[in-house]
Image (cartoon, rainbow, N blue to C red; front, side):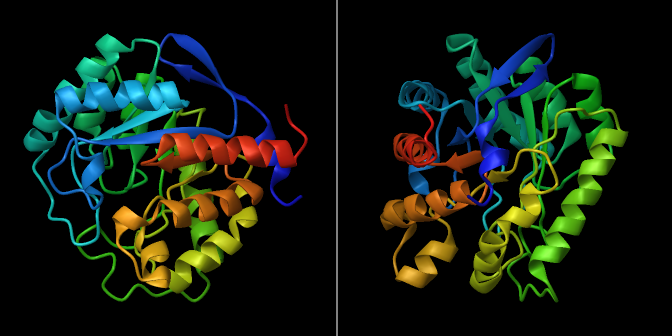
Length: 285
């Protein structure tokens, strides 16, 4: 079955001073410490974050991804100080309550990444792939945590203003291959790549990318997909993000069958069930 080999194995990551074995496929739950993320139910303060983190971990999340600056299409950039003000208390509180949980910091700024890892995060999820802040790669290498570079055309503010590709799959593969090489050259051994669904891509681009996902998994490192409640679902079905859980599950299933290793989602229970059913299809216990 296409993509099967890349999603069956577990990986072992160095997270600071410990080795963590992560069974794949895994589910990453989204916690947005922002006032304007596109899915309102994912926006949290500290108390909400603790409740949501507990629920997501109980439902089977392997990673919690915490962000303090919205990257929705058209988002206006917030200052680094404001991003830290939003995100660091959430990271600190969740890490204190759930010290064994793997927390990811969703940021493209090396300063935020450094402070969040000090506060308890154990991964860096970077929509800029080290290009929006040139100190990011060396910083992550010094922190000894896994790194997720993502493909994006433009910036969150401009990315949906007429994105164009001659060959979206080939261009994304080329970009991610180069960023994977750059991360490893910087001294980051544990890299997960993200094709960036919805980031500088229209609906046609997104479905071409999903259909060609095996070309990305062929790069030989775990692939994260973030399809949850995105426009590529809502535009086809004529629905709002709040109505897009069923469509998200359908596309997550396709992504897993094509070799995705990590699902980044708002709805953990359904994504975990999806992964279990795909596992059953493959004869896994």
